[in-house]
Length: 91
Image (tube, rainbow, N blue to C red):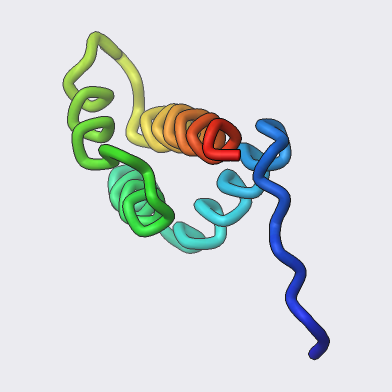
């Protein structure tokens, strides 16, 4: 098993990719709106400062014609960006 190495949170790109990967794992097997809900749940548990607010704002924003699949992708990208930025700034 070995010793678990602490994740370096000083690099924005590494943090972003880490959270994208973890959100995809959390939502694996789900589709559409259910996937978006699970992604939001992951980011809330991961420490996103206002995951529910971000979810609601993105859902209600002017994304006319956006499918549930596109919404889930957009949500994941925006939440990963904000959380990665916050983690980088804490260091």
